[in-house]
Length: 338
Image (cartoon, rainbow, N blue to C red; front, side, top):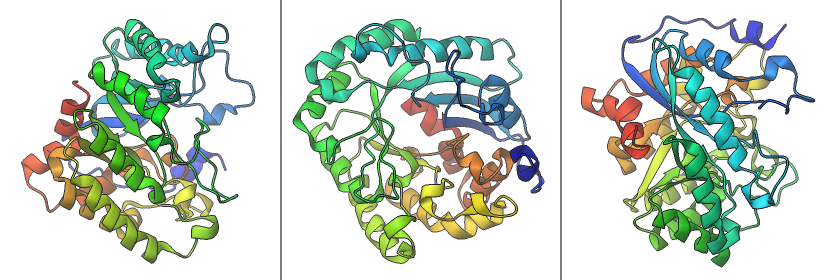
Protein backbone atom coordinates (compact mmCIF):
# COMPACT_ATOMS: atom_id res chain seq x y z
CA UNK A 1 0.00 0.00 0.00
CA UNK A 2 1.37 3.41 -0.97
CA UNK A 3 1.36 6.25 1.55
CA UNK A 4 -1.33 8.00 -0.50
CA UNK A 5 -3.52 4.89 -0.31
CA UNK A 6 -2.84 4.68 3.43
CA UNK A 7 -3.92 8.30 3.93
CA UNK A 8 -7.01 7.82 1.77
CA UNK A 9 -8.38 5.23 4.19
CA UNK A 10 -9.70 8.10 6.32
CA UNK A 11 -12.14 10.38 4.52
CA UNK A 12 -14.19 13.03 6.30
CA UNK A 13 -16.75 15.62 5.28
CA UNK A 14 -15.06 19.03 5.23
CA UNK A 15 -16.10 21.32 8.08
CA UNK A 16 -16.92 24.93 7.11
CA UNK A 17 -15.21 24.63 3.71
CA UNK A 18 -15.42 28.33 2.80
CA UNK A 19 -13.63 29.67 5.90
CA UNK A 20 -10.38 31.35 4.68
CA UNK A 21 -7.11 29.89 5.96
CA UNK A 22 -3.44 30.84 5.86
CA UNK A 23 -1.16 27.87 6.47
CA UNK A 24 1.87 29.52 8.13
CA UNK A 25 4.14 26.49 8.18
CA UNK A 26 5.00 24.01 5.46
CA UNK A 27 8.09 22.76 3.67
CA UNK A 28 9.08 21.85 0.11
CA UNK A 29 11.47 19.16 -1.07
CA UNK A 30 13.56 18.14 -2.89
CA UNK A 31 15.11 21.12 -4.63
CA UNK A 32 16.35 20.58 -8.20
CA UNK A 33 19.57 18.60 -8.20
CA UNK A 34 18.92 17.28 -4.67
CA UNK A 35 16.74 14.31 -5.58
CA UNK A 36 19.28 11.55 -5.01
CA UNK A 37 18.14 9.05 -2.40
CA UNK A 38 14.67 10.58 -2.01
CA UNK A 39 11.83 8.30 -3.21
CA UNK A 40 9.36 10.08 -5.49
CA UNK A 41 6.48 9.32 -3.13
CA UNK A 42 8.25 11.50 -0.55
CA UNK A 43 8.53 14.54 -2.81
CA UNK A 44 6.62 17.62 -1.64
CA UNK A 45 6.71 20.29 -4.30
CA UNK A 46 4.12 22.75 -5.58
CA UNK A 47 1.84 20.16 -7.18
CA UNK A 48 1.87 18.17 -3.93
CA UNK A 49 1.20 21.27 -1.84
CA UNK A 50 -1.64 22.25 -4.15
CA UNK A 51 -3.07 18.73 -3.99
CA UNK A 52 -3.32 19.19 -0.21
CA UNK A 53 -4.43 22.83 -0.12
CA UNK A 54 -7.12 22.09 -2.74
CA UNK A 55 -8.51 19.05 -0.90
CA UNK A 56 -11.59 20.79 0.50
CA UNK A 57 -10.62 23.62 2.86
CA UNK A 58 -10.23 27.21 1.67
CA UNK A 59 -6.45 27.65 1.78
CA UNK A 60 -5.63 31.12 0.48
CA UNK A 61 -1.96 31.65 1.32
CA UNK A 62 0.96 29.71 2.79
CA UNK A 63 4.30 30.38 4.44
CA UNK A 64 7.32 28.26 3.53
CA UNK A 65 9.67 27.44 6.41
CA UNK A 66 13.27 26.37 5.90
CA UNK A 67 14.20 22.71 5.63
CA UNK A 68 17.71 22.71 4.15
CA UNK A 69 16.73 22.60 0.48
CA UNK A 70 18.38 24.29 -2.49
CA UNK A 71 21.53 25.41 -0.70
CA UNK A 72 24.29 26.67 -2.98
CA UNK A 73 26.93 24.06 -3.79
CA UNK A 74 29.68 26.63 -4.11
CA UNK A 75 30.77 29.84 -2.46
CA UNK A 76 31.17 30.79 1.21
CA UNK A 77 29.62 28.33 3.65
CA UNK A 78 27.72 31.07 5.45
CA UNK A 79 25.92 32.12 2.27
CA UNK A 80 24.88 28.65 1.08
CA UNK A 81 21.43 28.78 2.78
CA UNK A 82 20.54 31.76 0.58
CA UNK A 83 20.07 29.21 -2.19
CA UNK A 84 16.95 27.97 -0.41
CA UNK A 85 15.39 31.43 -0.59
CA UNK A 86 16.18 31.62 -4.31
CA UNK A 87 14.70 28.14 -4.86
CA UNK A 88 11.44 28.94 -3.05
CA UNK A 89 11.04 32.35 -4.72
CA UNK A 90 10.90 30.44 -8.01
CA UNK A 91 8.21 28.10 -6.68
CA UNK A 92 6.27 31.03 -5.20
CA UNK A 93 6.23 32.79 -8.57
CA UNK A 94 4.82 29.62 -10.10
CA UNK A 95 2.14 29.49 -7.38
CA UNK A 96 0.91 32.96 -8.38
CA UNK A 97 0.17 31.62 -11.88
CA UNK A 98 -3.10 30.09 -10.68
CA UNK A 99 -5.08 32.49 -8.47
CA UNK A 100 -7.61 29.75 -7.72
CA UNK A 101 -5.01 27.91 -5.65
CA UNK A 102 -3.06 28.73 -2.49
CA UNK A 103 -0.15 31.09 -3.05
CA UNK A 104 3.19 30.85 -1.27
CA UNK A 105 3.27 34.36 0.14
CA UNK A 106 6.21 34.35 2.56
CA UNK A 107 9.54 32.62 3.13
CA UNK A 108 11.26 31.87 6.43
CA UNK A 109 14.83 30.85 5.63
CA UNK A 110 17.92 29.80 7.57
CA UNK A 111 21.02 31.72 8.54
CA UNK A 112 23.53 30.58 11.10
CA UNK A 113 23.03 32.89 14.05
CA UNK A 114 26.27 31.53 15.54
CA UNK A 115 28.09 33.73 13.03
CA UNK A 116 27.34 36.62 15.36
CA UNK A 117 27.65 40.09 13.86
CA UNK A 118 28.82 38.72 10.52
CA UNK A 119 25.43 37.05 9.89
CA UNK A 120 24.28 40.49 8.73
CA UNK A 121 25.82 39.80 5.32
CA UNK A 122 23.77 36.61 5.03
CA UNK A 123 20.57 38.38 5.99
CA UNK A 124 21.19 41.06 3.38
CA UNK A 125 21.70 38.33 0.76
CA UNK A 126 18.38 36.70 1.76
CA UNK A 127 16.66 40.07 1.48
CA UNK A 128 18.20 40.63 -1.96
CA UNK A 129 17.18 37.20 -3.30
CA UNK A 130 13.85 37.15 -1.49
CA UNK A 131 12.06 39.64 -3.77
CA UNK A 132 9.85 40.82 -0.91
CA UNK A 133 8.88 37.31 0.20
CA UNK A 134 11.69 36.79 2.71
CA UNK A 135 10.36 37.56 6.18
CA UNK A 136 12.75 36.05 8.67
CA UNK A 137 14.93 33.22 9.91
CA UNK A 138 14.46 29.92 11.62
CA UNK A 139 17.49 28.52 13.40
CA UNK A 140 16.36 25.24 14.91
CA UNK A 141 17.75 24.58 18.38
CA UNK A 142 16.39 21.12 19.16
CA UNK A 143 18.98 19.36 21.34
CA UNK A 144 18.70 16.35 23.63
CA UNK A 145 21.18 13.95 25.19
CA UNK A 146 19.00 10.93 24.41
CA UNK A 147 20.23 8.60 21.66
CA UNK A 148 16.65 8.08 20.48
CA UNK A 149 16.00 11.78 19.91
CA UNK A 150 17.68 13.26 16.87
CA UNK A 151 18.97 16.80 17.26
CA UNK A 152 17.78 19.46 14.84
CA UNK A 153 19.06 19.45 11.26
CA UNK A 154 21.11 22.59 11.98
CA UNK A 155 23.22 20.55 14.45
CA UNK A 156 22.86 22.96 17.38
CA UNK A 157 24.90 23.01 20.56
CA UNK A 158 23.21 22.62 23.93
CA UNK A 159 21.51 25.85 25.12
CA UNK A 160 22.22 27.47 21.76
CA UNK A 161 19.62 30.21 22.28
CA UNK A 162 21.58 31.44 25.31
CA UNK A 163 24.97 31.49 23.56
CA UNK A 164 26.62 34.93 23.30
CA UNK A 165 27.48 34.55 19.62
CA UNK A 166 23.96 33.37 18.81
CA UNK A 167 22.51 36.41 20.54
CA UNK A 168 24.84 38.70 18.62
CA UNK A 169 23.39 37.14 15.48
CA UNK A 170 19.90 37.77 16.79
CA UNK A 171 20.83 41.45 17.20
CA UNK A 172 21.39 41.58 13.44
CA UNK A 173 17.97 40.01 12.86
CA UNK A 174 16.28 42.44 15.21
CA UNK A 175 18.01 45.44 13.62
CA UNK A 176 16.42 44.55 10.27
CA UNK A 177 12.91 44.00 11.68
CA UNK A 178 13.00 40.35 10.60
CA UNK A 179 11.16 37.56 12.43
CA UNK A 180 12.65 34.61 14.29
CA UNK A 181 11.03 31.16 14.21
CA UNK A 182 12.20 28.86 16.99
CA UNK A 183 12.09 25.08 16.97
CA UNK A 184 13.26 23.08 19.97
CA UNK A 185 12.10 20.45 22.45
CA UNK A 186 9.88 20.85 25.51
CA UNK A 187 12.79 20.94 27.95
CA UNK A 188 14.25 24.00 26.17
CA UNK A 189 11.27 26.36 26.43
CA UNK A 190 12.89 28.30 29.27
CA UNK A 191 15.89 29.05 27.03
CA UNK A 192 13.57 30.67 24.49
CA UNK A 193 11.83 32.64 27.24
CA UNK A 194 15.17 34.13 28.27
CA UNK A 195 16.00 34.95 24.65
CA UNK A 196 12.63 36.65 24.23
CA UNK A 197 13.19 38.76 27.33
CA UNK A 198 16.62 39.82 26.03
CA UNK A 199 15.13 40.99 22.71
CA UNK A 200 11.71 42.46 23.49
CA UNK A 201 11.30 44.14 20.08
CA UNK A 202 12.07 40.94 18.14
CA UNK A 203 9.01 39.08 16.82
CA UNK A 204 9.50 35.44 17.83
CA UNK A 205 7.32 32.59 16.55
CA UNK A 206 7.27 29.49 18.72
CA UNK A 207 6.90 26.44 16.47
CA UNK A 208 5.07 23.19 17.23
CA UNK A 209 4.23 23.85 20.91
CA UNK A 210 7.92 23.60 21.80
CA UNK A 211 8.18 19.97 20.70
CA UNK A 212 6.80 17.80 23.54
CA UNK A 213 8.75 14.55 23.20
CA UNK A 214 7.22 11.11 23.59
CA UNK A 215 9.90 8.66 22.47
CA UNK A 216 13.02 7.15 24.02
CA UNK A 217 13.39 8.05 27.68
CA UNK A 218 10.30 10.28 27.38
CA UNK A 219 7.97 7.45 26.42
CA UNK A 220 5.28 6.92 29.06
CA UNK A 221 6.06 10.27 30.70
CA UNK A 222 3.35 12.31 28.95
CA UNK A 223 1.43 13.37 32.05
CA UNK A 224 4.50 14.70 33.85
CA UNK A 225 5.86 16.36 30.72
CA UNK A 226 2.50 18.03 30.08
CA UNK A 227 2.40 19.46 33.59
CA UNK A 228 5.87 21.01 33.27
CA UNK A 229 5.15 22.08 29.68
CA UNK A 230 2.07 24.02 30.86
CA UNK A 231 4.16 25.92 33.41
CA UNK A 232 6.87 26.77 30.89
CA UNK A 233 4.40 27.81 28.16
CA UNK A 234 2.58 30.05 30.62
CA UNK A 235 5.86 31.79 31.46
CA UNK A 236 6.79 32.12 27.77
CA UNK A 237 3.41 33.69 27.03
CA UNK A 238 4.25 36.53 29.40
CA UNK A 239 6.65 37.78 26.69
CA UNK A 240 4.40 39.93 24.46
CA UNK A 241 6.77 39.61 21.49
CA UNK A 242 6.26 35.83 21.24
CA UNK A 243 3.62 34.25 19.00
CA UNK A 244 2.69 30.58 18.94
CA UNK A 245 2.18 28.19 16.04
CA UNK A 246 -0.35 25.53 16.98
CA UNK A 247 0.34 22.25 15.22
CA UNK A 248 3.25 20.05 14.32
CA UNK A 249 2.55 17.40 16.96
CA UNK A 250 1.77 14.51 14.62
CA UNK A 251 5.47 13.82 14.15
CA UNK A 252 6.97 10.48 15.23
CA UNK A 253 9.03 12.21 17.97
CA UNK A 254 5.82 13.24 19.74
CA UNK A 255 5.13 9.60 20.46
CA UNK A 256 1.49 9.10 19.46
CA UNK A 257 2.64 6.54 16.86
CA UNK A 258 -0.14 7.18 14.35
CA UNK A 259 2.45 6.67 11.63
CA UNK A 260 2.76 3.03 12.71
CA UNK A 261 -0.97 2.28 12.66
CA UNK A 262 -2.97 0.42 10.02
CA UNK A 263 -4.63 3.71 9.08
CA UNK A 264 -3.93 7.41 9.70
CA UNK A 265 -5.40 9.42 12.55
CA UNK A 266 -8.95 10.75 12.35
CA UNK A 267 -9.74 14.32 13.34
CA UNK A 268 -11.49 13.07 16.49
CA UNK A 269 -8.41 11.08 17.49
CA UNK A 270 -6.12 14.08 17.12
CA UNK A 271 -8.54 16.28 19.06
CA UNK A 272 -8.86 13.72 21.85
CA UNK A 273 -5.08 13.33 22.16
CA UNK A 274 -3.97 16.94 21.80
CA UNK A 275 -6.82 19.40 22.46
CA UNK A 276 -5.48 20.24 25.93
CA UNK A 277 -2.21 21.55 24.43
CA UNK A 278 -4.12 23.79 22.02
CA UNK A 279 -6.57 25.16 24.58
CA UNK A 280 -3.90 25.92 27.17
CA UNK A 281 -1.72 27.72 24.63
CA UNK A 282 -4.65 29.77 23.37
CA UNK A 283 -5.65 30.56 26.96
CA UNK A 284 -2.26 32.01 27.91
CA UNK A 285 -1.31 33.62 24.58
CA UNK A 286 -4.73 34.73 23.38
CA UNK A 287 -6.00 34.11 19.86
CA UNK A 288 -4.33 37.31 18.62
CA UNK A 289 -0.93 35.63 19.22
CA UNK A 290 -1.80 32.13 18.00
CA UNK A 291 -2.00 30.62 14.52
CA UNK A 292 -2.91 27.11 13.39
CA UNK A 293 -0.30 25.38 11.20
CA UNK A 294 0.01 22.15 9.19
CA UNK A 295 3.75 21.40 9.36
CA UNK A 296 3.30 19.44 6.14
CA UNK A 297 4.63 17.18 4.81
CA UNK A 298 6.23 16.16 8.13
CA UNK A 299 2.88 15.62 9.88
CA UNK A 300 1.63 13.88 6.74
CA UNK A 301 3.30 10.79 8.18
CA UNK A 302 0.32 10.54 10.55
CA UNK A 303 -2.70 12.38 9.14
CA UNK A 304 -4.01 13.80 5.87
CA UNK A 305 -4.28 17.52 5.18
CA UNK A 306 -8.10 17.79 5.07
CA UNK A 307 -8.49 15.67 8.20
CA UNK A 308 -5.90 17.77 10.06
CA UNK A 309 -7.72 21.03 9.29
CA UNK A 310 -10.99 19.37 10.31
CA UNK A 311 -9.37 18.62 13.67
CA UNK A 312 -8.24 22.24 14.05
CA UNK A 313 -11.76 23.46 13.25
CA UNK A 314 -13.19 21.10 15.87
CA UNK A 315 -10.74 22.49 18.44
CA UNK A 316 -11.89 26.02 17.53
CA UNK A 317 -15.62 25.25 17.76
CA UNK A 318 -16.12 27.11 21.04
CA UNK A 319 -14.47 30.32 19.89
CA UNK A 320 -16.07 33.45 18.46
CA UNK A 321 -15.88 34.30 14.75
CA UNK A 322 -13.25 36.94 15.46
CA UNK A 323 -11.16 34.47 17.48
CA UNK A 324 -11.41 31.89 14.70
CA UNK A 325 -10.30 34.51 12.18
CA UNK A 326 -7.24 35.14 14.38
CA UNK A 327 -6.35 31.45 14.62
CA UNK A 328 -6.86 30.56 10.97
CA UNK A 329 -5.87 33.78 9.20
CA UNK A 330 -5.28 37.11 10.89
CA UNK A 331 -2.41 36.28 13.26
CA UNK A 332 -0.37 34.74 10.44
CA UNK A 333 -1.21 37.69 8.19
CA UNK A 334 -0.02 40.15 10.84
CA UNK A 335 3.14 38.32 11.92
CA UNK A 336 4.43 37.65 8.40
CA UNK A 337 3.09 40.89 6.84
CA UNK A 338 1.08 39.04 4.21
